[in-house]
Amino acid sequence: MLELALDASRGSFHLRVECRFTSEWTVIFGPSGSGKSTLLRQLAGLDRPLRGRIALDEHLLTDTNRGIYVQPGRRHTALVAQQPALFPHLSVTANVAYGLAALDKQSRTARVEQMLELVDARDLAKRRPQSLSGGEAQRVALARALAPLPRLLLLDEPFAALDGAASDALLQRLQNWVSGNRIQTVLATHDATDAFATGAEVSLLREGCLVAQGPADEALASERARLLGRIGST
Amino acid sequence: MDWQALTLTLKLASITTLILLAVAVPLAALLVLGRWRWLSALEALAALPLVLPPTVLGFFLLVLLGPRTAFGRGIIALLGHPLAFSFSGLVVGSVIYSLPFAVQPIVAGFAAVETSLVDAARLLGASSSRLVLSLMVPLARRSILAAAVLCFLHTVGEFGVVLMLGGDIPGATRTLSIVLYNQVENFDYAAANRTAAILLALSVTALAAIYIGNRPHGGRRA
Image (tube, rainbow over all chains, first blue to last red; front, side, top):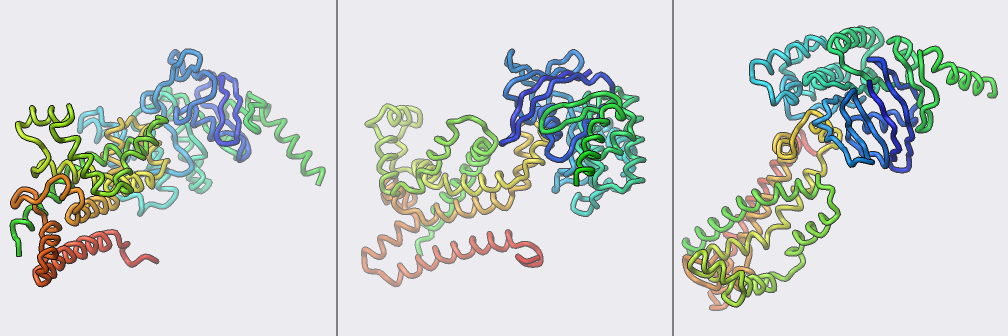
């Protein structure tokens, strides 16, 4: 379970969110600029809030009142953003192995192979990031993020570079895998089909505030009405 | 040709460059990655030798390292001899004098590493030292090469600090710049021309190495 109460700013943008994600797979839905990436960066610990608290199960990650702030690398949290951010001087294998420094060589090799298999990228193992297509780079970035077996997986529109069929297949495989490994996942998207496709609990974010939370059809009803209203008024 | 001075100059420049790289890489990483407010003051201090006249810097070091200060007396007690007018003293002076030439290109190289890559490494659990060594140093290797060449050349051509702090002791502190100065003072322009030509050749060769190393494959418009 992920609990958060945050008051944060990034540049001139202000985010004020208080919620609890109880299901293992949660979708944060919102238009561009609604604060999805800002929220994910807060959860990952890449930015600090002005005030607030983040707790994952029994682990307190941030609590400004008590001066608690767990560094990003100690949160057991992975973030896959729209830009894959692969290390350009390392091979695909070395990229995926980067977060596995604590494992011995044999375990590391096995884990890298397992992750590349999961994202259907075994044939890319020896390639350099510069030679990968956008979709291939995204899959490798996902494998790299999953390799250390995080407790919290944050996905910031990570399938944008994949075509529809490939995206659906990967999403399905990913959902099965995180469910099997009990990894709490938060997927941020501005695509309503992602929100409906996963059948997950959806939180609707608008202008830095959480305005609805629940099953996709309920949470997105107000957004649907708002959009229809806008179409009707033009 | 004063081979002794040439050897001493190259030795001084090589040692200074190695020490500066060892100091400047962590210092530049601190300046780029650190969040402390006083880092701006540290950055200004590291850049000070850029604007300070070399003779002034040499004078300060001469006083600081001499027997008039507690620091200088401590150094003398530790080493058994003063640092001023010795090769070791020249190394200290050269390191301080060329510090900005090492720090500034490396800071620029580290700052150019994309934030998303740094964030990714942090999320994957990289410690600060691993972040610097496994990510920033390889990605900023051209800036580090440029810093090394600049420091080497700057030390080769150093005059004011060398004269103030080291004087003109053959085999210990007499570098090519001092030799050139002596030759001009003695109106031996033929010898001065040869010494100047060697200094010029060193500079052109090293700068060419930087530009060749930094030139993208296929040209700048590739």
